[in-house]
Length: 69
Image 1 (spheres, rainbow, N blue to C red):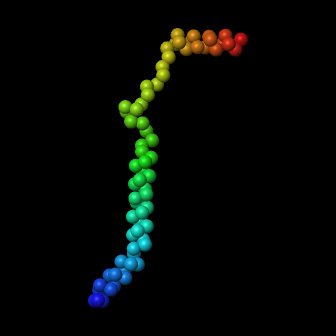
Image 2 (cartoon, rainbow, N blue to C red; image 1 turned 90 degrees about the horizontal axis):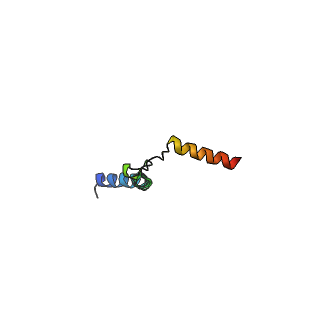
């Protein structure tokens, strides 16, 4: 074997653990991001807020006061 080939092989063997660790960490991070997803719901998944008019709120407050009394 030639000297440059032996040097290249030695460097490759020396760097292999570092390159393997970087590859595994990158793959793990990509998988984690893909499985966690976006914390914000998609537009189609959003539930409209519950709204009640003043009359409905007044009725609820009156019923609550009646139960408390």
